[in-house]
Length: 408
Image (cartoon, rainbow, N blue to C red):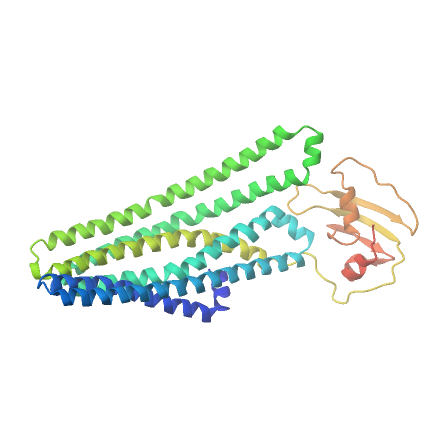
């Protein structure tokens, strides 16, 4: 959540403007049932057409004002959420560019793509829902509860019980959903990884007639993602109906307690029932936003992991820029990729002079490319050292080293 708040702070002015329009919209919604009660109790009960038309005109004006506020709120919410999404993607991409290949291997390219696309979209949707619904829902819900108590004071105990039960359901919603949606994102990483692996080696797959094997791998990843999504959505599906049941039960109790209501106060009872409906909508909105929040929190942790990643390769404090002639020497070099169970290269030693040709042969996966990639320091050795013209590559400025195309 700190990640999301840090980006929201950059747009605090627009956020506050959107909140102001949203608050006015909520107030407009809350005023409608009260004026409806005036129409019933003062207009209809007394057959006073002028009051009916007068209050009806006020309600129409309030509705138009609320609609205008909603349009402005949507404009600022969409603008802010899209801008923040763009900024997060830019920051991820910028940080990934600064990382070494060891970092990329550990984070996995497919997972990085998922974080730049799907995870950022989850945060974007959450910010949009905050500015459109999340703030409005508590204002509407609390305002409706207060107005119910004012309209029908006897209903205060019912409202307290409803709010407590709904709060417990919302908290349970968070604890149940958070780990499940985290697993969904990991399964999506796996699906993207399988897809990327196939597309990057499609010629090899076709050459060796391995389409069936790749199809099976994709099917397994797709099935696992579907199962994780189903598990998460099934666990979350029960909370909204339970909230509906709680509020509707409160409406039934309200009507039962008010069965002996005076005819002159029917409008107040109607207003209270309408306000109970607004409480229900507010709680449902909060529940839906909590679902988005659970997804967004899981995604923000994954994005934060990339943004907090530091380059695995340490830069030399005083980098050297020697006039490179091309003498290369490997001294007892061993190297293993991040997360690998065994070394890709083990205790390699040789020397190559400028103009000398050395053949490196071996089957796929024997370490030929790994050996070459160590010279321009795309990776750092696990043991030993690599010298270029007698200088350890770790002491040479990276840009200077690679500009001279060592190992090309």
